Length: 106
Image (cartoon, rainbow, N blue to C red; front, side, top):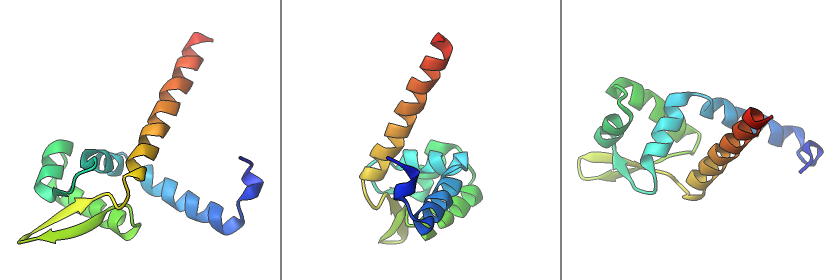
């Protein structure tokens, strides 16, 4: 795919998304969700981040549409809005691992 296939608006939106995902704790949170909806307490436990830190990053992810909240009784559960997001993150991880292997072979 050629960068010229994107208009300036698309590139700007994509750049904003990548800046958001450049924060390692946000990626930890997204990956910790997997395909399940999870309460904040589970996210805190699996990421080993503080409650304040998790809440801060969940807000940014929610505002970007990368997680969706679902109220279940007194608790709010967070989910990925589309399982495709997890697949895309896995594809990036795989590409990076393969790229790093190639660099060490040369």
